[in-house]
Length: 482
Image (cartoon, rainbow, N blue to C red; front, side, top):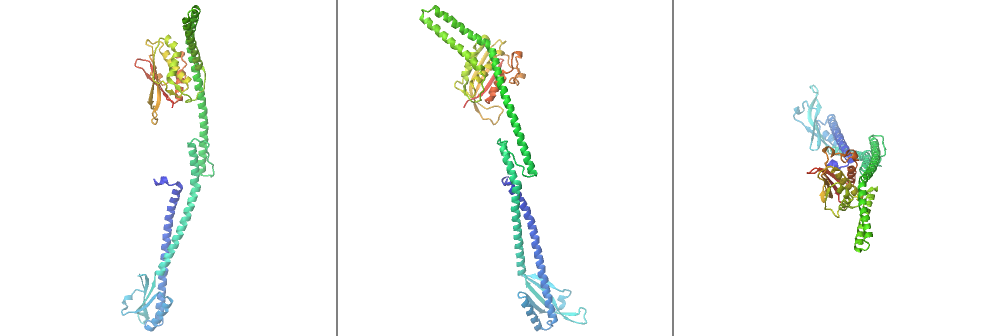
């Protein structure tokens, strides 16, 4: 956890610093130990040298037998070494020094040397006789102080070296590692936010330079890929728009004969009523009634022609740019198809529960969705004995299927069901593909593809299910307008 919070440069520097500290500690320890050994050895050698010199003076001037001479020699050496201790002891038994030339003892802060005091003794195996003992002691405090001073100097030097190396390492790591990584991370963050114009300058000819080169190649590839995707999407959108318009024109062709009939019927009514007015000029009430019927039929013809023009008008509409009342469009579309429904002997039923409920879809596009679905149902029931068409709208709270993170949203469920031949199972997965038709040569294969494209543009979805009595049912989920 700590490593994830500490910057990389600090971690690298601390690692190097720990290793350096270990090396400096080992080096300093051996250096101090060497100094201590060397100074202790020098002190011991110097003390032994003075002790031998003191004994030599005593043995030369006869101080071994003459106490006065011994005291004189002691005062001389004490004056030259004020803090040292010089002493001569007489021995009654020389066996204590047999085979021992010198004794060395460090105790209570003093280094002591003991040497036997001798006098010449001819005609003996050793050639001398031991008559006393020379004691020389020096304080070790100055030596310890010198060792401590040397230790402090060594420690200071080590800490200074450590400080310079730590700062130098930190600066080096920051310059050679951290800054290039930060620059690369900034480029990656820019790419993650969608800015593919990011580029990292190749400032060095090493692994970081190679990494920058690979990053630039990646962003270049992503830019090219994005451009290709945008071009493909634009071409796809253009194709879908052309397909929708083509399907619209195909639908108009299928409706042309019926519209001619629809227009012909009110024209016949108008003609008959006009003749009635001529015949009954004196009957004011009949004239008024016939005039009202003529006006009504004229309005009907106008609505039929206007809807045909609206349907065939090719428009580029941005999804979500307008709001449309679903129930009003359904009612209007069925009025246009009333002649086909009656001519085919189809009984239609409406259950519209979404009056004044709006969707973010252009009116003409929703009109086209309803027309395509209803015309598709009319054609599916052409040879059916039972011909029933049901259209229902229901406001719901629904979660988009297949997306676990999707939140529940307000939708309008449009249900179009018929009692036709239904949709074979093998075709259910392909009915929304362009140019895939289950009607043979009589179908264009564009109707349901156009419907699916329009619904997909507003992030809606379609479900296809079989009805209990046979036929097909389309459940269209339209996101409600905010």
